[in-house]
Length: 565
Image (tube, rainbow, N blue to C red; front, side):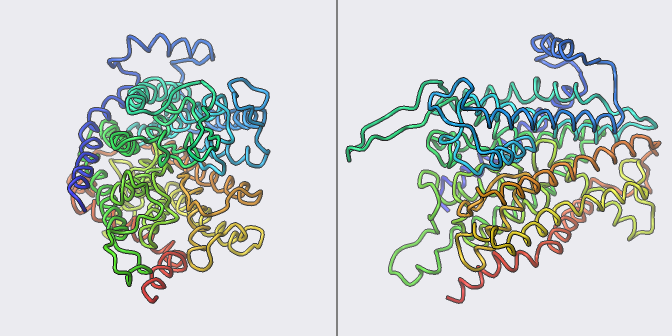
């Protein structure tokens, strides 16, 4: 590692951790309808939205009504985006006269962006008009993370409220998360990206004559605004095909730093939002400590692996500084490793290097990050409510060990909550292992693999892990744009999204109806080093026991094979 690599890591952690407590408090006040700095400016807009949509600001919903509103909104969003993609050839802002998408690919893309996955089996600049990028994908880039934040807030209310069925109002939570939270943050980041050279224009694609006398098409478009929300909303879908490895999406070292830090900026802030809900910031620091431990471990393994020379070239008389295959020379190995770990610790999916070219162990860490269920910071809202599921599981296991009824922050966990927790533990295995096994077994699916042996299996495993984890990154050598994979990956995304959201809402409703017992000296503490250790080990053990056999067939076997050469 060079000096600039250490400065990059320091700047990254400062940009992420320093503003988190302040942003966390701001988001808490926003979601609870309290006055903020932006209230005088945005409250009239907020109230106009409610009047136009017929929403009663004073009405609250129980978990079932909240879930129905969320599902109805998702269905309308899915159908609307599907129609835009299919009909884009007839819609405005299409200077390249691009035709509509084929229906199976349109279905996959619509599910992907509505589920906050942003898996892309197409190249953005060659397939989508400005209208589809902005009105179709851009809108979903805002509202899909807003839905995740709304679900997290419901879970927080379920833990903190007592003897009630009221958990808030979906339409209010969705509006506030978008209007006060995501929009202002994205405006700031978009301006920073424009400053660094990211295009934001509606003019036609440019044409240039190369030195070889060939006419080259240079894609342009309103890119900065979509890149800002793709990062801050933990979406990840690139405006251009190669995502943040493209010089128009990520032109400088400064833009690289801004983008990679913004991926987990809001998820880290939400840890402190949770602390304000439960009136105990020690809980925030405990969860942050566990996430940082897992993040730093993964970053260390990936960076070390990528800095090692390629074994196939070890006999050559050349100086090697790690493997640069698939990496942008503008950023180098450490910046690429940091991005890969960050984007898969969150449910982001954007890339500034090709994960398919990583070393076996370097590619395994991003895969394992996703297999844990995006709980290492994770997506906006989704990461923290995924981590809180592990917290409840840890509390339950600790209660079994000491022979006490498990409780968390004064709420006892009973049979109903435990059954729902067990259900959530099945989401990742079904989406990843079952669907990967089918893809590896069926000839029509296995034909998409471009590499033989263990790496080919890793391509399949990574794709279905990414889909189920609602991440969206890929081993890009995998030929995913086929009818089979478009349909099955769409199914994986739906399983990964709603297999967590619906049990989370049900658990929140169950906890809110309970009385809250005061936390006393006999209560199991959930904020100290012992709990952080138990929580971290629980996450690693559940993930390891579930996915180690599959990893052994893929990246582990590939790594051992490379050592034997």
